[in-house]
Length: 126
Image 1 (tube, rainbow, N blue to C red):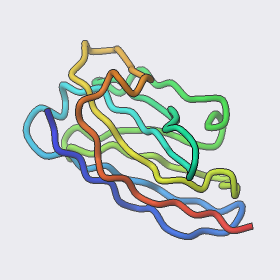
Image 2 (cartoon, rainbow, N blue to C red; image 1 turned 45 degrees about the horizontal axis):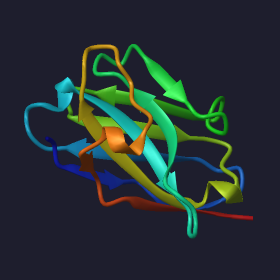
Image 3 (cartoon, rainbow, N blue to C red; image 1 turned 120 degrees about the horizontal axis):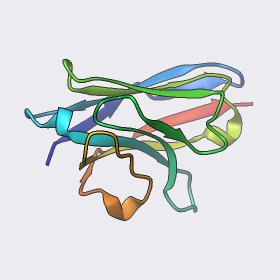
């Protein structure tokens, strides 16, 4: 499994943008499908976006479609989440997670993942 460290969170105004990064250690990052989740206070951790090992397959939850973009750079062992048109309801701790996977699979369930980062806080002010 990989070790994951998220960064890029912060405080942004309504309508602003942030780009989150998730850096992985080790030499097996390219073998992992990667997913972003988020968790707001008092709620369960929820799926945001997923990307396959190859980067060719992506999936988004409804609230992320058209506003968020997931991407990866296997040479840099990093997965990104570009978030535009942020809203106060996007305020949450954002986590990345990785799972060894076939080339074009994506995963969206928390139980699919053994490797998690520590999370990065995103706060959107109204």
